[in-house]
Picture (cartoon, rainbow, N blue to C red):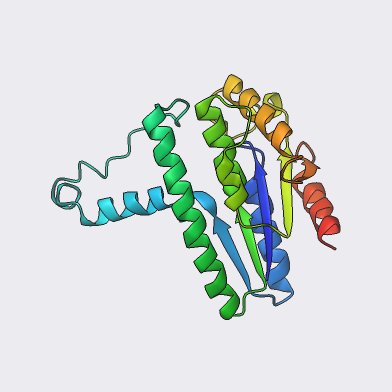
Length: 205
């Protein structure tokens, strides 16, 4: 079973390319699992559990209100440590998940974001230029792509990240440093989605 990961800034087109890859392999009648790192995360599962079982949520609907909130751009030392613990849990869960998928006959895991992106986010919040030592526990990907896009271009797209351009520049700086550590295959994300898809497929073949 092959693991194919697509990393990059918010708004770089990761989800689009992951879905296109999934469709490509499914047309070849290959068994493919689309994996979204955020949806899989332990923190997200806790949130879903709370919304499902919290009595306040069930009877008052207060918890289920969805106010428009900005994404997290700062964190305390405690919050950063909790994110690291959650990352360890997610890596352990993913290893079991991967084994189960292999037994079920899956040929590919297409990962929309990966643990690389989690490490970049932790480094950003911790204001560190060195990746967390947790990165050595990340399961190796067979193909790891980094969609490299200028923040200025992302800010012109239909869905603009709410964190702002300074945030995007800071995160891009981290991706550009870490790509060599993780041997990420850099793809020019400023191209059209079909041109990007073609380049990814060439790299896979």
